Image 1: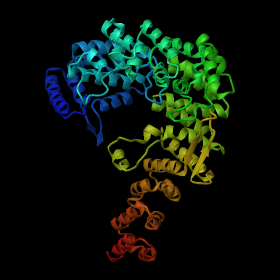
Image 2: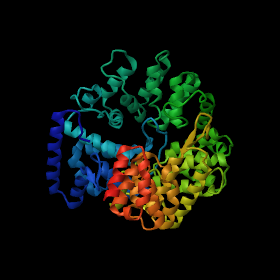
Image 3: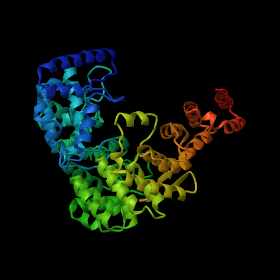
Image 4: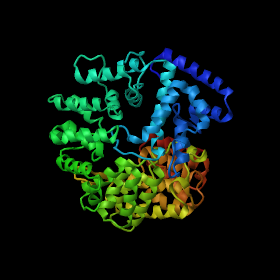
Length: 557
Protein backbone atom coordinates (compact mmCIF):
# COMPACT_ATOMS: atom_id res chain seq x y z
CA UNK A 1 0.00 0.00 0.00
CA UNK A 2 1.37 3.39 -1.13
CA UNK A 3 4.84 1.95 -1.65
CA UNK A 4 6.36 2.66 -5.06
CA UNK A 5 9.72 2.18 -6.76
CA UNK A 6 9.58 5.75 -7.99
CA UNK A 7 11.04 8.58 -5.91
CA UNK A 8 8.55 11.19 -7.10
CA UNK A 9 5.58 8.92 -6.36
CA UNK A 10 7.05 7.94 -3.00
CA UNK A 11 7.33 11.62 -2.02
CA UNK A 12 3.77 12.31 -3.18
CA UNK A 13 2.53 9.24 -1.27
CA UNK A 14 4.04 10.55 2.01
CA UNK A 15 2.29 13.89 1.48
CA UNK A 16 -0.94 12.03 0.68
CA UNK A 17 -0.72 10.00 3.90
CA UNK A 18 -0.28 13.18 5.92
CA UNK A 19 -3.33 14.67 4.20
CA UNK A 20 -5.41 11.58 5.05
CA UNK A 21 -4.27 11.76 8.68
CA UNK A 22 -5.24 15.43 8.87
CA UNK A 23 -8.59 14.85 7.14
CA UNK A 24 -9.33 11.96 9.51
CA UNK A 25 -9.47 14.45 12.40
CA UNK A 26 -12.93 15.39 11.12
CA UNK A 27 -14.07 11.79 11.77
CA UNK A 28 -15.00 10.19 15.11
CA UNK A 29 -12.39 8.61 17.39
CA UNK A 30 -12.98 5.05 16.12
CA UNK A 31 -12.33 6.09 12.52
CA UNK A 32 -9.32 8.18 13.55
CA UNK A 33 -7.92 5.12 15.32
CA UNK A 34 -8.46 2.98 12.20
CA UNK A 35 -6.52 5.48 10.06
CA UNK A 36 -3.79 5.67 12.69
CA UNK A 37 -3.48 1.86 12.83
CA UNK A 38 -3.54 1.38 9.05
CA UNK A 39 -0.45 3.60 8.74
CA UNK A 40 1.31 2.31 11.87
CA UNK A 41 4.74 1.02 10.87
CA UNK A 42 6.30 0.27 14.27
CA UNK A 43 4.92 -1.30 17.42
CA UNK A 44 6.97 -2.79 20.29
CA UNK A 45 10.15 -2.66 18.18
CA UNK A 46 8.46 -4.62 15.37
CA UNK A 47 8.23 -2.99 11.93
CA UNK A 48 5.24 -3.29 9.59
CA UNK A 49 4.27 -2.22 6.09
CA UNK A 50 1.15 -0.07 5.81
CA UNK A 51 -1.81 -2.17 6.86
CA UNK A 52 0.45 -4.90 8.23
CA UNK A 53 0.00 -4.12 11.91
CA UNK A 54 -3.79 -3.83 11.67
CA UNK A 55 -4.07 -7.05 9.68
CA UNK A 56 -1.97 -8.93 12.23
CA UNK A 57 -3.87 -7.43 15.18
CA UNK A 58 -7.21 -8.46 13.69
CA UNK A 59 -5.90 -11.97 12.97
CA UNK A 60 -4.86 -12.38 16.62
CA UNK A 61 -8.13 -10.89 17.88
CA UNK A 62 -10.40 -13.05 15.73
CA UNK A 63 -8.43 -16.31 15.84
CA UNK A 64 -10.63 -17.85 18.53
CA UNK A 65 -13.95 -16.67 17.03
CA UNK A 66 -15.77 -19.54 15.36
CA UNK A 67 -17.56 -17.87 12.46
CA UNK A 68 -16.00 -14.56 11.45
CA UNK A 69 -18.13 -12.24 9.34
CA UNK A 70 -16.99 -9.39 7.09
CA UNK A 71 -18.44 -6.98 9.64
CA UNK A 72 -16.04 -8.36 12.29
CA UNK A 73 -13.12 -7.18 10.16
CA UNK A 74 -14.54 -4.01 8.64
CA UNK A 75 -17.54 -2.91 10.66
CA UNK A 76 -19.95 -0.37 9.20
CA UNK A 77 -18.83 2.09 11.83
CA UNK A 78 -15.43 2.48 10.13
CA UNK A 79 -16.83 2.91 6.61
CA UNK A 80 -16.08 6.68 6.74
CA UNK A 81 -12.36 5.83 7.17
CA UNK A 82 -12.49 3.37 4.27
CA UNK A 83 -14.13 6.00 2.05
CA UNK A 84 -11.46 8.51 3.04
CA UNK A 85 -8.74 6.01 2.09
CA UNK A 86 -10.09 4.84 -1.27
CA UNK A 87 -12.84 7.21 -2.32
CA UNK A 88 -16.55 6.53 -2.81
CA UNK A 89 -16.20 4.64 -6.12
CA UNK A 90 -13.56 2.16 -5.00
CA UNK A 91 -15.23 1.78 -1.59
CA UNK A 92 -18.41 0.51 -3.28
CA UNK A 93 -16.39 -1.89 -5.45
CA UNK A 94 -14.41 -3.08 -2.40
CA UNK A 95 -17.64 -3.88 -0.54
CA UNK A 96 -19.14 -5.65 -3.57
CA UNK A 97 -16.07 -7.84 -4.14
CA UNK A 98 -15.84 -8.60 -0.41
CA UNK A 99 -19.42 -9.94 -0.42
CA UNK A 100 -18.38 -12.63 -2.92
CA UNK A 101 -14.79 -13.30 -1.86
CA UNK A 102 -15.67 -16.51 0.02
CA UNK A 103 -16.57 -18.06 -3.35
CA UNK A 104 -12.85 -18.10 -4.15
CA UNK A 105 -9.89 -19.91 -2.55
CA UNK A 106 -8.23 -17.93 0.24
CA UNK A 107 -4.80 -19.51 -0.21
CA UNK A 108 -2.31 -17.87 -2.57
CA UNK A 109 1.28 -18.15 -3.78
CA UNK A 110 3.26 -21.12 -5.07
CA UNK A 111 2.36 -23.20 -1.98
CA UNK A 112 -1.36 -22.43 -2.21
CA UNK A 113 -4.20 -24.93 -1.98
CA UNK A 114 -7.64 -24.75 -3.61
CA UNK A 115 -9.46 -24.23 -0.32
CA UNK A 116 -12.42 -22.04 0.54
CA UNK A 117 -14.08 -21.04 3.77
CA UNK A 118 -17.40 -19.60 4.89
CA UNK A 119 -15.51 -17.79 7.68
CA UNK A 120 -13.99 -14.45 6.71
CA UNK A 121 -11.14 -15.11 9.13
CA UNK A 122 -9.33 -16.97 6.38
CA UNK A 123 -9.71 -13.98 4.05
CA UNK A 124 -8.14 -11.31 6.26
CA UNK A 125 -4.94 -11.20 4.19
CA UNK A 126 -6.72 -11.17 0.78
CA UNK A 127 -9.03 -8.41 2.04
CA UNK A 128 -6.17 -6.25 3.25
CA UNK A 129 -4.36 -6.79 -0.05
CA UNK A 130 -7.53 -5.68 -1.86
CA UNK A 131 -7.86 -2.68 0.44
CA UNK A 132 -4.26 -1.65 -0.25
CA UNK A 133 -4.82 -2.07 -3.98
CA UNK A 134 -7.79 0.28 -4.04
CA UNK A 135 -5.97 2.84 -1.90
CA UNK A 136 -3.20 2.79 -4.53
CA UNK A 137 -5.65 3.13 -7.43
CA UNK A 138 -7.41 6.05 -5.74
CA UNK A 139 -4.09 7.78 -5.09
CA UNK A 140 -2.80 7.16 -8.64
CA UNK A 141 -6.17 8.10 -10.20
CA UNK A 142 -6.03 5.52 -12.99
CA UNK A 143 -8.84 3.54 -14.60
CA UNK A 144 -9.23 -0.16 -15.38
CA UNK A 145 -8.23 0.18 -19.05
CA UNK A 146 -4.97 1.87 -18.07
CA UNK A 147 -4.36 -0.98 -15.64
CA UNK A 148 -4.84 -3.90 -18.02
CA UNK A 149 -2.99 -2.09 -20.81
CA UNK A 150 -0.20 -1.44 -18.27
CA UNK A 151 0.07 2.20 -19.31
CA UNK A 152 0.74 3.53 -15.83
CA UNK A 153 3.91 5.20 -14.53
CA UNK A 154 7.21 3.40 -14.05
CA UNK A 155 7.88 2.20 -10.53
CA UNK A 156 4.28 1.05 -10.03
CA UNK A 157 3.79 -2.70 -9.52
CA UNK A 158 1.05 -5.07 -8.42
CA UNK A 159 -1.97 -2.86 -9.13
CA UNK A 160 -3.58 -5.19 -11.70
CA UNK A 161 -5.76 -6.87 -9.08
CA UNK A 162 -7.61 -9.85 -10.66
CA UNK A 163 -10.67 -9.37 -8.42
CA UNK A 164 -11.10 -5.82 -9.71
CA UNK A 165 -10.63 -6.90 -13.34
CA UNK A 166 -13.20 -9.71 -12.79
CA UNK A 167 -15.57 -7.19 -11.21
CA UNK A 168 -15.43 -5.06 -14.35
CA UNK A 169 -15.99 -8.15 -16.53
CA UNK A 170 -19.04 -9.23 -14.51
CA UNK A 171 -20.46 -5.70 -14.56
CA UNK A 172 -20.41 -5.65 -18.35
CA UNK A 173 -17.41 -3.43 -19.08
CA UNK A 174 -17.29 -4.26 -22.77
CA UNK A 175 -13.92 -2.60 -23.35
CA UNK A 176 -12.32 -4.88 -20.75
CA UNK A 177 -14.11 -7.95 -22.12
CA UNK A 178 -13.09 -7.15 -25.71
CA UNK A 179 -9.45 -6.57 -24.74
CA UNK A 180 -9.28 -9.93 -22.93
CA UNK A 181 -11.08 -11.71 -25.79
CA UNK A 182 -8.51 -10.24 -28.14
CA UNK A 183 -5.67 -11.53 -25.96
CA UNK A 184 -7.22 -15.02 -25.92
CA UNK A 185 -7.67 -15.16 -29.66
CA UNK A 186 -4.94 -13.13 -31.30
CA UNK A 187 -1.18 -13.03 -31.26
CA UNK A 188 -1.29 -9.25 -31.86
CA UNK A 189 -3.65 -8.13 -29.12
CA UNK A 190 -3.64 -4.77 -27.37
CA UNK A 191 -2.88 -6.36 -23.99
CA UNK A 192 -0.72 -9.15 -22.67
CA UNK A 193 -2.35 -12.26 -21.28
CA UNK A 194 -0.77 -11.66 -17.88
CA UNK A 195 -1.07 -13.89 -14.82
CA UNK A 196 -3.67 -11.59 -13.23
CA UNK A 197 -5.66 -11.09 -16.44
CA UNK A 198 -5.87 -14.87 -16.72
CA UNK A 199 -6.82 -15.27 -13.07
CA UNK A 200 -9.55 -12.64 -13.50
CA UNK A 201 -11.18 -14.83 -16.16
CA UNK A 202 -11.54 -17.70 -13.67
CA UNK A 203 -12.80 -15.40 -10.92
CA UNK A 204 -15.47 -13.98 -13.25
CA UNK A 205 -18.86 -15.43 -14.20
CA UNK A 206 -18.26 -14.82 -17.92
CA UNK A 207 -18.83 -18.21 -19.59
CA UNK A 208 -17.77 -16.92 -23.03
CA UNK A 209 -14.30 -16.03 -21.74
CA UNK A 210 -14.03 -19.41 -19.96
CA UNK A 211 -14.94 -21.24 -23.16
CA UNK A 212 -12.41 -19.21 -25.15
CA UNK A 213 -9.78 -20.06 -22.55
CA UNK A 214 -10.65 -23.75 -22.91
CA UNK A 215 -10.21 -23.51 -26.68
CA UNK A 216 -6.87 -21.77 -26.20
CA UNK A 217 -5.74 -24.58 -23.89
CA UNK A 218 -6.53 -27.18 -26.55
CA UNK A 219 -4.91 -25.09 -29.29
CA UNK A 220 -1.71 -24.53 -27.28
CA UNK A 221 -0.08 -27.76 -28.61
CA UNK A 222 3.65 -27.04 -28.28
CA UNK A 223 3.11 -23.76 -26.42
CA UNK A 224 3.98 -25.00 -22.96
CA UNK A 225 4.07 -21.44 -21.58
CA UNK A 226 0.45 -20.76 -22.57
CA UNK A 227 -0.66 -24.10 -21.16
CA UNK A 228 1.16 -23.36 -17.91
CA UNK A 229 -0.39 -19.88 -17.64
CA UNK A 230 -3.89 -21.30 -17.96
CA UNK A 231 -3.45 -24.33 -15.72
CA UNK A 232 -1.68 -22.39 -12.96
CA UNK A 233 -4.63 -19.98 -12.71
CA UNK A 234 -7.67 -22.18 -13.14
CA UNK A 235 -7.78 -23.04 -9.43
CA UNK A 236 -7.95 -19.40 -8.30
CA UNK A 237 -11.57 -18.58 -9.07
CA UNK A 238 -15.02 -20.14 -9.09
CA UNK A 239 -15.31 -23.90 -8.58
CA UNK A 240 -17.49 -24.36 -11.68
CA UNK A 241 -14.82 -22.68 -13.83
CA UNK A 242 -12.19 -25.03 -12.46
CA UNK A 243 -14.37 -28.05 -13.15
CA UNK A 244 -15.05 -26.92 -16.73
CA UNK A 245 -11.33 -26.61 -17.46
CA UNK A 246 -10.53 -29.83 -15.62
CA UNK A 247 -12.89 -31.80 -17.86
CA UNK A 248 -11.02 -30.46 -20.90
CA UNK A 249 -7.74 -31.66 -19.40
CA UNK A 250 -9.21 -35.05 -18.49
CA UNK A 251 -11.04 -35.69 -21.75
CA UNK A 252 -8.00 -34.77 -23.85
CA UNK A 253 -5.34 -36.50 -21.71
CA UNK A 254 -3.45 -33.24 -21.18
CA UNK A 255 -1.88 -34.73 -18.05
CA UNK A 256 0.86 -35.93 -20.39
CA UNK A 257 2.29 -32.41 -20.34
CA UNK A 258 4.60 -31.49 -17.46
CA UNK A 259 2.97 -28.06 -16.99
CA UNK A 260 -0.36 -29.77 -16.30
CA UNK A 261 1.27 -32.19 -13.86
CA UNK A 262 2.84 -29.28 -11.99
CA UNK A 263 -0.51 -27.50 -11.90
CA UNK A 264 -2.21 -30.65 -10.56
CA UNK A 265 0.36 -30.79 -7.76
CA UNK A 266 -0.36 -27.13 -6.96
CA UNK A 267 -4.18 -27.34 -7.04
CA UNK A 268 -4.13 -30.19 -4.57
CA UNK A 269 -1.00 -29.35 -2.60
CA UNK A 270 0.32 -32.87 -3.19
CA UNK A 271 3.74 -31.47 -4.06
CA UNK A 272 5.40 -28.11 -3.60
CA UNK A 273 7.62 -25.93 -5.76
CA UNK A 274 10.57 -27.85 -7.17
CA UNK A 275 9.30 -31.24 -5.96
CA UNK A 276 9.57 -34.44 -8.00
CA UNK A 277 6.23 -34.71 -9.84
CA UNK A 278 7.09 -37.80 -11.86
CA UNK A 279 5.00 -40.00 -9.53
CA UNK A 280 1.94 -37.71 -9.72
CA UNK A 281 -0.51 -37.92 -12.59
CA UNK A 282 -3.18 -40.27 -13.83
CA UNK A 283 -4.21 -41.78 -10.51
CA UNK A 284 -4.84 -38.37 -8.97
CA UNK A 285 -6.57 -37.14 -12.13
CA UNK A 286 -8.96 -40.12 -12.09
CA UNK A 287 -9.84 -39.51 -8.45
CA UNK A 288 -10.57 -35.80 -9.01
CA UNK A 289 -12.70 -36.65 -12.05
CA UNK A 290 -14.78 -39.05 -9.95
CA UNK A 291 -15.11 -36.41 -7.23
CA UNK A 292 -16.42 -33.85 -9.72
CA UNK A 293 -18.98 -36.37 -11.02
CA UNK A 294 -19.92 -37.56 -7.54
CA UNK A 295 -18.84 -35.37 -4.57
CA UNK A 296 -20.01 -38.06 -2.11
CA UNK A 297 -17.14 -40.22 -3.35
CA UNK A 298 -14.99 -38.24 -0.91
CA UNK A 299 -16.53 -40.18 2.02
CA UNK A 300 -15.42 -43.45 0.44
CA UNK A 301 -11.90 -42.04 -0.01
CA UNK A 302 -11.71 -41.12 3.67
CA UNK A 303 -12.12 -44.79 4.58
CA UNK A 304 -9.11 -45.80 2.47
CA UNK A 305 -5.68 -46.92 3.70
CA UNK A 306 -4.08 -45.06 0.81
CA UNK A 307 -2.72 -41.66 1.86
CA UNK A 308 -3.29 -40.07 -1.56
CA UNK A 309 -6.94 -41.14 -1.55
CA UNK A 310 -7.53 -39.93 2.00
CA UNK A 311 -5.78 -36.65 1.26
CA UNK A 312 -7.84 -35.98 -1.88
CA UNK A 313 -11.01 -36.77 0.09
CA UNK A 314 -10.02 -34.06 2.59
CA UNK A 315 -9.00 -31.74 -0.25
CA UNK A 316 -12.36 -32.09 -1.96
CA UNK A 317 -14.20 -31.20 1.23
CA UNK A 318 -12.05 -28.09 1.64
CA UNK A 319 -12.80 -26.88 -1.90
CA UNK A 320 -16.29 -26.14 -0.51
CA UNK A 321 -15.40 -25.17 3.05
CA UNK A 322 -12.24 -25.99 4.97
CA UNK A 323 -14.33 -26.49 8.09
CA UNK A 324 -15.79 -29.65 6.52
CA UNK A 325 -12.30 -31.14 6.21
CA UNK A 326 -11.42 -30.06 9.76
CA UNK A 327 -14.39 -32.07 11.08
CA UNK A 328 -13.05 -35.13 9.22
CA UNK A 329 -9.57 -34.55 10.68
CA UNK A 330 -10.97 -34.46 14.20
CA UNK A 331 -12.55 -37.87 13.62
CA UNK A 332 -9.19 -39.21 12.42
CA UNK A 333 -7.50 -37.92 15.56
CA UNK A 334 -9.70 -40.11 17.72
CA UNK A 335 -9.09 -43.43 16.00
CA UNK A 336 -6.83 -43.61 12.99
CA UNK A 337 -3.69 -45.46 12.00
CA UNK A 338 -0.19 -44.07 12.35
CA UNK A 339 0.23 -43.24 8.65
CA UNK A 340 -3.00 -41.20 8.75
CA UNK A 341 -1.70 -39.30 11.78
CA UNK A 342 1.36 -38.36 9.72
CA UNK A 343 -0.88 -37.38 6.81
CA UNK A 344 -2.80 -34.94 9.04
CA UNK A 345 0.44 -33.01 9.60
CA UNK A 346 0.75 -32.51 5.84
CA UNK A 347 -2.79 -31.23 5.64
CA UNK A 348 -2.29 -28.71 8.47
CA UNK A 349 -0.39 -26.42 6.08
CA UNK A 350 -3.76 -25.65 4.46
CA UNK A 351 -5.18 -24.22 7.70
CA UNK A 352 -4.64 -20.53 8.49
CA UNK A 353 -5.56 -20.63 12.18
CA UNK A 354 -2.22 -21.16 13.97
CA UNK A 355 -3.87 -21.78 17.35
CA UNK A 356 -5.94 -24.62 15.94
CA UNK A 357 -2.92 -26.14 14.19
CA UNK A 358 -0.94 -25.94 17.42
CA UNK A 359 -3.64 -27.73 19.40
CA UNK A 360 -3.87 -30.57 16.88
CA UNK A 361 -0.09 -30.92 16.79
CA UNK A 362 0.12 -31.03 20.59
CA UNK A 363 -2.51 -33.79 20.73
CA UNK A 364 -0.59 -36.02 18.32
CA UNK A 365 2.80 -35.34 19.94
CA UNK A 366 1.40 -36.24 23.37
CA UNK A 367 -0.14 -39.43 21.96
CA UNK A 368 3.26 -40.65 20.75
CA UNK A 369 5.34 -39.10 23.53
CA UNK A 370 6.47 -42.47 24.90
CA UNK A 371 6.90 -44.14 21.52
CA UNK A 372 10.07 -44.63 19.49
CA UNK A 373 8.09 -43.06 16.64
CA UNK A 374 8.21 -39.71 18.41
CA UNK A 375 11.17 -38.46 16.35
CA UNK A 376 9.22 -38.84 13.10
CA UNK A 377 6.14 -37.34 14.73
CA UNK A 378 8.18 -34.32 15.79
CA UNK A 379 9.67 -34.01 12.31
CA UNK A 380 6.11 -33.65 11.02
CA UNK A 381 4.48 -31.68 13.83
CA UNK A 382 6.94 -29.73 16.02
CA UNK A 383 7.02 -26.63 13.81
CA UNK A 384 3.26 -26.22 14.37
CA UNK A 385 3.82 -26.05 18.14
CA UNK A 386 7.06 -24.06 18.32
CA UNK A 387 8.55 -22.40 15.27
CA UNK A 388 10.49 -19.56 16.87
CA UNK A 389 13.54 -18.82 14.72
CA UNK A 390 16.38 -16.48 15.61
CA UNK A 391 16.53 -15.68 19.31
CA UNK A 392 18.36 -12.37 18.79
CA UNK A 393 15.25 -10.42 19.84
CA UNK A 394 13.82 -13.04 22.20
CA UNK A 395 14.67 -11.19 25.41
CA UNK A 396 13.10 -7.97 24.14
CA UNK A 397 10.05 -9.74 22.69
CA UNK A 398 9.30 -11.47 26.00
CA UNK A 399 9.69 -8.18 27.87
CA UNK A 400 7.29 -6.27 25.60
CA UNK A 401 4.78 -9.15 25.39
CA UNK A 402 5.35 -9.99 21.72
CA UNK A 403 5.92 -13.61 22.73
CA UNK A 404 4.15 -15.23 25.70
CA UNK A 405 4.15 -18.74 27.17
CA UNK A 406 0.33 -18.90 26.99
CA UNK A 407 0.53 -18.70 23.19
CA UNK A 408 2.23 -22.10 23.17
CA UNK A 409 1.13 -23.90 26.35
CA UNK A 410 -1.93 -23.73 28.56
CA UNK A 411 0.21 -23.85 31.72
CA UNK A 412 3.61 -24.77 33.13
CA UNK A 413 2.67 -28.43 33.57
CA UNK A 414 1.93 -28.82 29.87
CA UNK A 415 5.18 -27.05 28.98
CA UNK A 416 7.19 -29.42 31.20
CA UNK A 417 5.34 -32.39 29.71
CA UNK A 418 6.58 -31.25 26.30
CA UNK A 419 10.09 -30.69 27.60
CA UNK A 420 10.08 -34.33 28.79
CA UNK A 421 8.90 -35.56 25.38
CA UNK A 422 11.50 -33.47 23.55
CA UNK A 423 14.26 -34.72 25.82
CA UNK A 424 13.31 -38.35 25.15
CA UNK A 425 13.31 -37.67 21.41
CA UNK A 426 16.68 -35.95 21.57
CA UNK A 427 18.17 -38.98 23.30
CA UNK A 428 16.77 -41.21 20.55
CA UNK A 429 18.65 -39.26 17.88
CA UNK A 430 21.85 -41.00 16.79
CA UNK A 431 23.20 -38.02 14.86
CA UNK A 432 22.70 -34.31 14.29
CA UNK A 433 19.74 -34.88 11.98
CA UNK A 434 17.28 -37.57 11.04
CA UNK A 435 15.77 -37.92 7.56
CA UNK A 436 12.49 -39.70 6.87
CA UNK A 437 12.38 -40.40 3.15
CA UNK A 438 9.81 -41.20 1.96
CA UNK A 439 7.34 -39.76 4.44
CA UNK A 440 3.56 -39.62 3.92
CA UNK A 441 3.83 -39.76 0.10
CA UNK A 442 6.39 -41.55 -2.10
CA UNK A 443 7.72 -38.18 -3.34
CA UNK A 444 7.74 -36.39 0.03
CA UNK A 445 10.20 -36.41 2.93
CA UNK A 446 10.59 -34.82 6.35
CA UNK A 447 13.62 -34.31 8.53
CA UNK A 448 14.48 -32.98 11.95
CA UNK A 449 17.69 -31.76 13.56
CA UNK A 450 18.87 -31.91 17.13
CA UNK A 451 19.10 -28.11 16.95
CA UNK A 452 15.35 -27.88 16.32
CA UNK A 453 14.51 -30.02 19.33
CA UNK A 454 17.05 -28.38 21.64
CA UNK A 455 15.91 -24.88 20.64
CA UNK A 456 12.31 -25.80 21.50
CA UNK A 457 13.51 -27.10 24.88
CA UNK A 458 15.46 -23.89 25.46
CA UNK A 459 12.41 -21.77 24.68
CA UNK A 460 10.34 -23.73 27.20
CA UNK A 461 13.09 -23.14 29.77
CA UNK A 462 13.03 -19.41 28.98
CA UNK A 463 9.27 -19.41 29.56
CA UNK A 464 9.58 -21.25 32.90
CA UNK A 465 13.17 -20.69 34.14
CA UNK A 466 13.19 -22.69 37.35
CA UNK A 467 16.42 -24.28 38.56
CA UNK A 468 15.30 -27.80 37.66
CA UNK A 469 14.63 -27.03 33.98
CA UNK A 470 17.74 -24.90 33.66
CA UNK A 471 19.82 -27.70 35.15
CA UNK A 472 18.42 -30.18 32.60
CA UNK A 473 18.89 -27.71 29.73
CA UNK A 474 22.63 -27.37 30.41
CA UNK A 475 23.21 -30.81 28.90
CA UNK A 476 21.60 -29.85 25.59
CA UNK A 477 22.52 -26.19 25.06
CA UNK A 478 25.42 -27.10 22.75
CA UNK A 479 22.97 -28.83 20.40
CA UNK A 480 21.64 -25.38 19.48
CA UNK A 481 23.21 -23.90 16.36
CA UNK A 482 26.17 -21.63 16.98
CA UNK A 483 24.41 -18.49 15.71
CA UNK A 484 21.59 -18.90 18.27
CA UNK A 485 23.32 -20.55 21.21
CA UNK A 486 24.66 -17.37 22.82
CA UNK A 487 21.23 -15.75 23.08
CA UNK A 488 19.81 -18.63 25.09
CA UNK A 489 22.91 -18.72 27.31
CA UNK A 490 22.53 -15.00 28.03
CA UNK A 491 18.83 -15.23 28.86
CA UNK A 492 18.94 -18.40 30.95
CA UNK A 493 22.20 -17.89 32.84
CA UNK A 494 22.57 -14.11 32.97
CA UNK A 495 22.61 -14.35 36.77
CA UNK A 496 23.72 -17.88 37.77
CA UNK A 497 22.06 -18.68 41.08
CA UNK A 498 23.78 -21.90 42.21
CA UNK A 499 27.01 -23.82 41.87
CA UNK A 500 25.78 -25.96 38.97
CA UNK A 501 24.87 -22.89 36.92
CA UNK A 502 28.16 -21.15 37.75
CA UNK A 503 30.12 -24.27 36.80
CA UNK A 504 28.23 -24.41 33.52
CA UNK A 505 28.96 -20.78 32.63
CA UNK A 506 32.68 -21.30 33.35
CA UNK A 507 32.67 -24.39 31.12
CA UNK A 508 31.00 -22.38 28.34
CA UNK A 509 33.98 -20.01 28.25
CA UNK A 510 35.65 -22.59 26.01
CA UNK A 511 32.77 -22.59 23.51
CA UNK A 512 34.12 -21.50 20.11
CA UNK A 513 30.88 -19.79 19.12
CA UNK A 514 29.64 -16.42 20.36
CA UNK A 515 28.32 -18.30 23.38
CA UNK A 516 31.91 -18.27 24.66
CA UNK A 517 31.90 -14.45 24.49
CA UNK A 518 28.53 -14.35 26.25
CA UNK A 519 29.94 -16.59 28.98
CA UNK A 520 32.84 -14.12 29.38
CA UNK A 521 30.36 -11.26 29.90
CA UNK A 522 28.37 -13.30 32.45
CA UNK A 523 31.54 -14.20 34.39
CA UNK A 524 32.63 -10.57 34.35
CA UNK A 525 29.23 -9.13 35.35
CA UNK A 526 28.79 -11.63 38.21
CA UNK A 527 32.40 -11.43 39.39
CA UNK A 528 32.86 -15.19 39.14
CA UNK A 529 36.63 -14.81 38.73
CA UNK A 530 36.97 -14.79 42.51
CA UNK A 531 35.36 -18.23 42.75
CA UNK A 532 36.98 -19.81 39.67
CA UNK A 533 40.53 -18.44 39.17
CA UNK A 534 42.14 -21.87 38.69
CA UNK A 535 39.49 -23.03 36.19
CA UNK A 536 39.87 -19.85 34.14
CA UNK A 537 43.68 -20.17 34.18
CA UNK A 538 43.33 -23.69 32.80
CA UNK A 539 41.41 -22.28 29.82
CA UNK A 540 44.44 -20.25 28.68
CA UNK A 541 45.37 -23.33 26.63
CA UNK A 542 42.65 -22.30 24.12
CA UNK A 543 44.10 -21.59 20.67
CA UNK A 544 42.09 -18.46 19.93
CA UNK A 545 44.17 -15.36 20.67
CA UNK A 546 41.09 -13.19 21.20
CA UNK A 547 39.62 -15.69 23.59
CA UNK A 548 42.89 -15.96 25.59
CA UNK A 549 43.03 -12.16 25.77
CA UNK A 550 39.57 -12.04 27.29
CA UNK A 551 40.51 -14.70 29.82
CA UNK A 552 43.61 -12.73 30.80
CA UNK A 553 41.40 -9.63 31.19
CA UNK A 554 39.25 -11.62 33.58
CA UNK A 555 42.21 -12.83 35.60
CA UNK A 556 43.68 -9.32 35.79
CA UNK A 557 40.40 -7.70 36.83
